[in-house]
Image 1 (cartoon, each protein chain N blue to C red):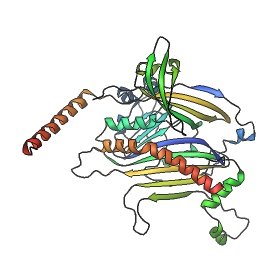
Image 2 (cartoon, rainbow over the protein chains, first blue to last red; image 1 turned 90 degrees about the vertical axis):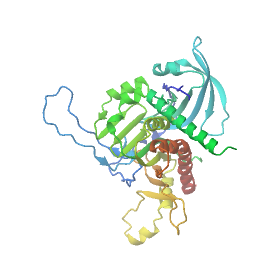
Image 3 (cartoon, rainbow over the protein chains, first blue to last red; image 1 turned 180 degrees about the horizontal axis):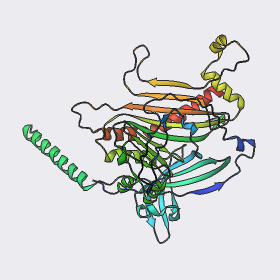
Length: 195
Length: 234
């Protein structure tokens, strides 16, 4: 059983380009109040309102808790910076040189007919929370994307390592017991039907 | 894709319908289970939108929003869509394989900006021809426009009906975020139906669907969205 798990890292670099020096820059965020409603389907995204909870340390009073309201807003209604991927590479760490502060990687592009290629990435792009997860074989995703915020457009990048949960001792024990049961069944079947 | 449009915004959401205990899905649990890093967990704990109750939980970080109600689990991307969203959903359901689930939807939503004003009208006129409506609303002072179109794609011939509960819903609307823009949404819906005697656990089936379909649905969404624009706008 593979106990080893990959980590997650994130870093951002902003490169500002005057990609569209036209009047479209300020026109991107055109929002109206008359939003079309999206038919609610059970596995489509929905918006939910906030639940109010009393602040910590508040005097003990009777406080009404309002459950969230499920509203028929389309995802278009969210007020967040707009991002669209330009290219995503799935990378695998080939080797790590901590003295030099670099990792050698193998990159596979998601979009377009781009052949796999190797490269070196500085460890400065790996955030502290994931530094210990940079080991040979670790998988990461390097995303180059366009970000539009309040009328400005920039190219940005993020590096995130893949995270998989580690198994608890109970889970490992349960799997061991299950495996033994399966093995016993196979053995008894072999004895019943010798080839 | 031809230069008729540019994609301005892409988001993804993995939605699962079933029976959940929202109070489980806390930043502490996500960090303790090594599904997110320490900094992400700290950010989520301090986030103004954090909610943790028996009926509802909302955990928000820089790159995802996790909303869990007692009958619904929703994991939505924040910032650029990346396979880490898939990995997080897979990790959660791997650790909670006994969660009763009934269906899963893999969703991709995008806003495109059309390069020409005429293209915006042309797309609406292609998907919703105005001929019928003009015959009913003859007054030329009235403007008739497309507000929403939803198409279902299912296996099975029309005359025989669907052969499974799996289906895809494609929606097209004018964009509320992008001027002269169009909003697309693809919902790839999979019912989870575990038969008696089947040793698979519900969470394992969810993991399997996500691993098998998420990437494919992403590719399909971009291809279909671009395909609609190309065919409508030329």
